[in-house]
Length: 381
Image 1 (cartoon, rainbow, N blue to C red):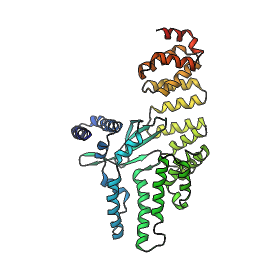
Image 2: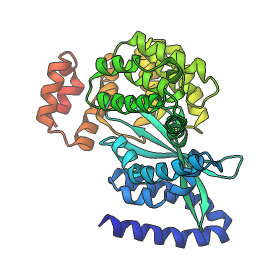
Image 3: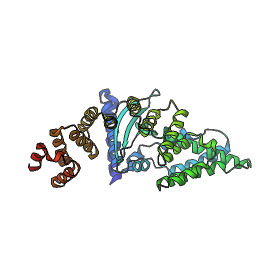
């Protein structure tokens, strides 16, 4: 079924792009259609569509050293075969989304003429990330040739290039009989094992293994990133230190504001969090959903007036239970009883709550409010 969907969508793309190339005013609608379709198929766990738009050859060109050296050429052929067999971009993105939300945010054109599309990944735990897809014109269609992950602070090609060069260095050492020949490959294997331990939630074991990686490797960006992923599950202090180390090493990276925002949250530096959130918002071309996090920051600052303003603003576009929980709490705390009743009705209409269950929940959580005239009228309706 998914293969037929992919074929249909590609045929639609071909039709749309012909008109887009002849009618300049249709260009934005084409890009939006491309992006919305991509996001939709990812939310449907359809990896085939994204993979059909991924140009492996151009992607590999960003990774491999182009040298006439026969040993390097031989290694490149072997590495390319292995990567093509193992790399599944669609599966990588779909697995990251899991049961979360994936939405198109913005698109822009880089100085080299490539199209970039930014998507927001929002997990059920409230954590978010941005994926910046790079598109290049290939065979009458824009194809995906790379992805920048804001939480990683690195393009996928750069991550794989680091691993590739370490493996290549080890392979060339073997050729010349260097006694350190397997060191690079050992560190890459540790990197793979660390990812496995994190997936198994064995954070202390992952940290112990990370500490055995030589310092020269730990100075590379990908290893600094994995230090952050390990530290966020150990302690706030270690997490903050890992982000500080990363940001000091890459102060001009687009991910700086993203990580600085997260660090400020961990340190409960609410003014700093708001500052970096605003800078992040500008850097990605404005994402309306970030108003939710502004609401959270103001809520944490006990500025319920501004928290209510931003939560109400985001409610016009999005509906999810945690947002309604905050709105209800603020309305009840600030005696906005009529608005609290509106939120209760929103629970019923948007999430199919059983009213009797909702009444019990309110009476247990907000006993004083449950005695107000507004609630009693609503209860009898």
